[in-house]
Image (cartoon, rainbow, N blue to C red; front, side, top):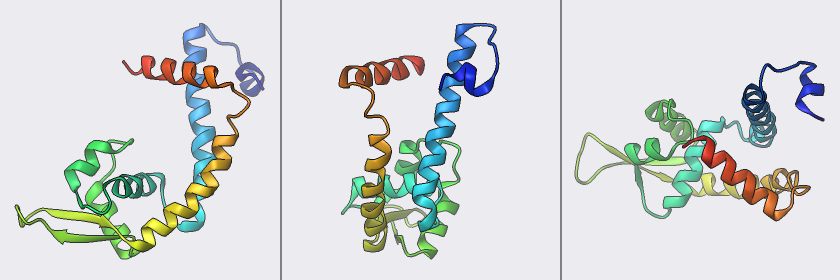
Length: 148
C-alpha cells in the first residue's frame, strides 16, 4: 500500500513524504521486532545490548563500548545492564584496570535467547524478499546517504 493511501494524506513535498515514509516504515519494522522479542520480555534496547555483547563474546565489554555501539544513543545503559543482570542474561565483573567500572558479558541464557530470536528474525528478513538484491543494496545506500 502506498503511504498516500495508508495515511490518506497529501504531502506538501516529496521530501516530507520521504521523511514520513521512513518514519512509518521504522514503526512497522519496530512493531514486528517487538512481537518477536516480547515473549522473552526484552525491550528493543535490551535486545540491541545483548547483540552487542554477543559480538564481543567470549570477551567482556565496557559500559562505554556498549553505549558507543547502541542504535538508540539515549538509552540508560547502566540501568539496562542491571535489568539484564536480574534476568540472568548478562554477568557483571569489576574491571581489572578501573575498579569503579564494570565489564559486562552475555550469559549462556542470553546467547540462547538470541539464537531463538535469530530464527524468528529470518521471517522478518523474508518480508523484504520482494525487493531484488540490487534494490536492497540501493535502499541501504540511500538510507546511509540520508544520515550523512
